[in-house]
Image (cartoon, rainbow, N blue to C red; front, top):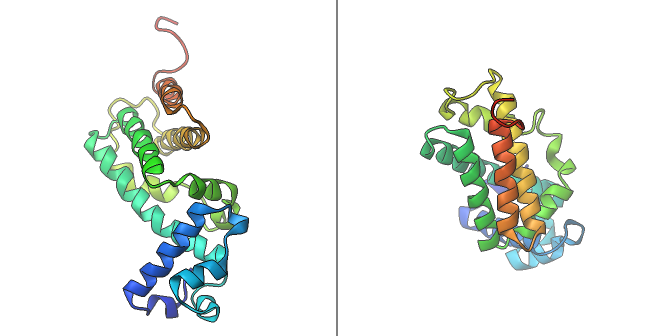
Length: 196
């Protein structure tokens, strides 16, 4: 996480550094992310960078933490707009995420997240637990069979992340979308035909 020195910077200077860093993380594999390129584009010295962040892992973790807040808010908004319906919420979330990945060219950024999750996963005792706590009060329980809402929510989230990963790798998003919808339906309706 950033130092107090970074947090004391003028907001425009903070944003410039973070935008430059995000662009670098969106452009190249994690191992090729260059602190020199970031500092040059942000117009700060290398020494200044290291007074703000320990290293690129620290910077990446902070960017992810900021994005986590956006993800939480967006997920909650979608669930509310779907009246708490898990199926409809997760179908919409898939479409929204895939659209944003394409729109903002975030494929490389997501690959860096998935490949280097170990850098920041130890900061979360239970990955996804914070998101669940943030949205649990807007999920409709009426149609759910399971009393373990968190478990059900994590099944849907796991399926969503897998679907997004497949979409990032694929050149045929409509097929990935159909496969994802099929998996959501299996989560919702089970694997047996009616009457079984």
